[in-house]
Length: 432
Image (tube, rainbow, N blue to C red):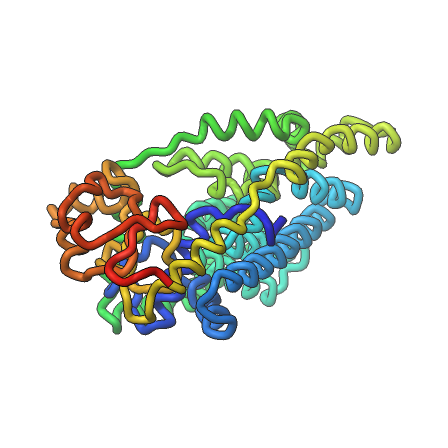
């Protein structure tokens, strides 16, 4: 599935950022960056080693699949240490059969390592509560810092863990000085990134595009439709999760249940409520679902039969409902074959251009009416004219995506439609 499943445009987005970094472009200064860049630093040497070709994406998908397996392993450890092996095993079975979780957790996106490192932070916090070891505090804070450097939406987990620590300190289960030590380690761990931003002069752009733009985004994506789809595809998971929230009241499961509710609820605090925003919550939801199953059903054979029946439909969907990515990979290599290393490509929705230069700081615009560029223009009055950019930079290839007037003379006088792909237009000389 990792090799064959269709690519989400986000995967091209994050891969292209790493390519731009590899070619000397500066984060936040030379081009638009909307997220924390730790994953891009990790992808950069992979592109350098495997080359500027579509098959490199498959290598990155392998890395994401391995990260997905590590998420499963850490989920197992959290559940095992909180409850027992039976609950842990059921947790990972349920998580591995969650359609939205699996499809998003194998994609090339920072949400995946962000989830892994966030879970590791929670695991070490759990171990600190059991052992009171300073080493576990250091590990927990460090992994939380990594999670934040992968993606800024870790802020929700940070707030949750702060509240949890304050509550534990108020109950005298941990000392306040341990809370302060945790956050001191966290601060030291993220400090190099902010020093880099200050010394490169990128701090103001970082604040603008990583925080302010997201808070003021004109585009809104509601979670209601895809959450309803998730319930239809994984009804067994959701029903026993709801039951688990009831079972968890005044039990040792309450903190995992609380984490799941708060992280799931944080989805509704952002304007673009997309499925990947639920990745961090779902391991905790799976643990609570498994906990309720073991509490409600004591007969092992009945429990096993019920689980098999419950995961049969979503497992079928995962196996059967996949669209092949070969056409996408061929199209990316086609773009590379048509262009030289120093030539430009206009592709403002990032559907084909991974390994060639862009026309503007806003190499990615989002939807014309409400995307990131439209939001920035509403805040600053920034002038962006795609037709002038095409006329000035003379890109070798343009995509018709987000070009409202393909009859503009700056296009019709110089570009012809590709014989291979109807949405691509090639400038000048014969196609290779």
